[in-house]
Image (cartoon, rainbow, N blue to C red; front, side, top):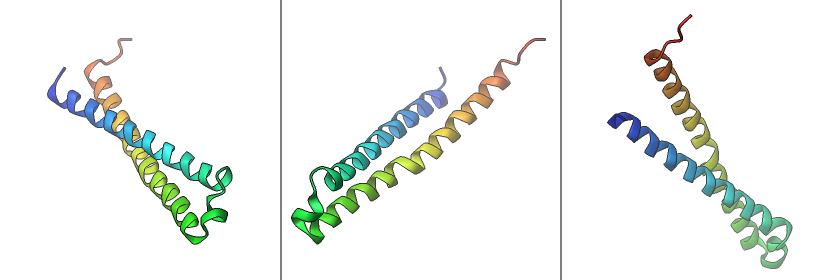
Length: 87
């Protein structure tokens, strides 16, 4: 396994962790709004807390998915060049 492949695997692992954090923050924001009824209990501060959780959840989850897809496509293309199919 080359140094570049190990580096890509580390990047992919980091991106998956960021996606997990993002999804957890999204779920936490949803929980605060729907079940804990934080905006009604805390007023404007509750709304801000919910919005921050959801905003950071989106920030962590969406761009990393695009970058992860880009890395996987690039790795797949490299594998195809190394091992062409025999007809």
